[in-house]
Image 1 (cartoon, rainbow, N blue to C red):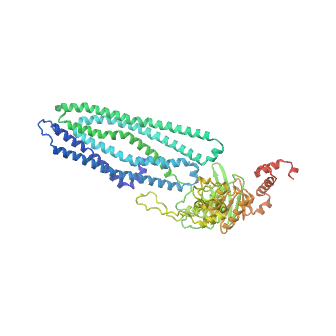
Image 2 (spheres, rainbow, N blue to C red):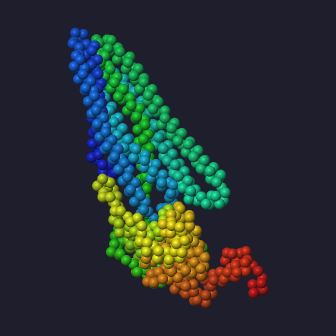
Image 3 (cartoon, one colour):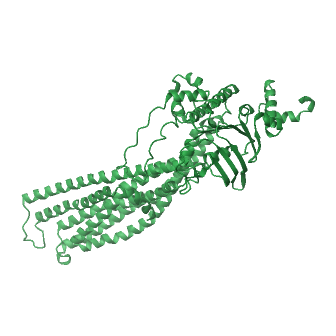
Length: 640
């Protein structure tokens, strides 16, 4: 009942359609019984047995014609009503499917990094396809058949009681057995269908990861192992489906057996009533034929009871899985009463006041105090795991600090509307994500759609106006300028189709450096107030790095730029350099100031210079830290 209660807001949007459709089903079931009444009249008329008196007059040819016409009209009327039902209920179920998918996808867009760190893409896709289809089938064909079965039984039993209460009691004696079996199997079907869907999600996630990581799989030559893993997961799905079929399959056969047993009893008792009218009252052959025909109309609904039970239980189990997506909430959100909706623009002045962040028992940032004036080009460096990326994530509110305050233009970032905050910030992550689209559309991804109205949720698709059309291509002049500043223009112009070149999934058709530069261009083209580059120059050579830094210098005028990196060549031109270690700011100053102090930054510069010297001498060691460690192990004279 709780599942139906949570589905009601969607069903309520289509009340008129469901009412019309279900009324059509009820009337159609009553009309479908009329042909057997006309057949009864014809048989009894032909046999002269419309009652217990053998002297009763028979039927005329004209009456038979009218009865035949009545059968045709009843069939036509029932067919028209079923057409009305399909146009109402089936269409309503499709519209509800759209509305649920729209609302789930809309809610997924509001969820933050913490949610997607836990969720699996394949599982989300399976819920939005397989589970949603199960719910739609329950709301469409399932709802129709439930009302069809209930109204069919009600009208049929009313007619059968009017014909013979003795025969009707025989039929009723079979029903408790059917209900008991259905009650038990419904719970089993629900449980086993959930297990099947969970395994489907695992298989979808496995396939998605393998398709995305095809290069890694082939690079390590472990195709056979991956196929074996996938085979094992499919065998488990097969086992679970067989387990489901074991409770779903025998149901129909068992119900057919019970119905056949009921027909046998009716034949014996009904024959006795016809042959012994004194014992059974006025019960004619025509009445027996009408009774059997009416009961035959129940055969299909009885057989469908098992199937509909399975459909309903699968739909309810799937709806529970979909509700998890609808009810998921982000940890970072605009808090009512705290968010200042009047904030629309930002200058880019960033401040950290005693900011700390912990993951479980591990302290990632420890009482960080830092001020970055608007328009400053800041380099951030430090050992792996020192908190550089987390520091940037706090500015964009990918997470909130455990203690302290992060400020933008003097505002606590938790009071700035998330939409305003993220429209004024552009981030180039360590691992850039590119879409399977043209280079132009990838660069201009963030240009269009900022001013589009929000898509309404929880409303009927019938009353919702169509969304506005999006431009098919972004402003190419801005795209080309961003590509130039990111050092990508020369590469793109060398492609046969230029900016219309289609990229493979995740941009696999580009090199690592080209992907990074495309992501940088995508960030630059938005002209953000704050630009964050998280180690996004690691895959480019020094000459390309110089061109990109020159472009960033041009872009950074009047903007705040945070450049996270490990190479001194990348950081040395920053206005300020911040060095983190174990979640704390250990050094801050210009390149020359930090070298003069002889601290962490100076040591980093020394290690990279030594590694560069070894590279120049064609030594096999390339990594800076490995090179430094090797030199420190050599005798001091050798170093000199």
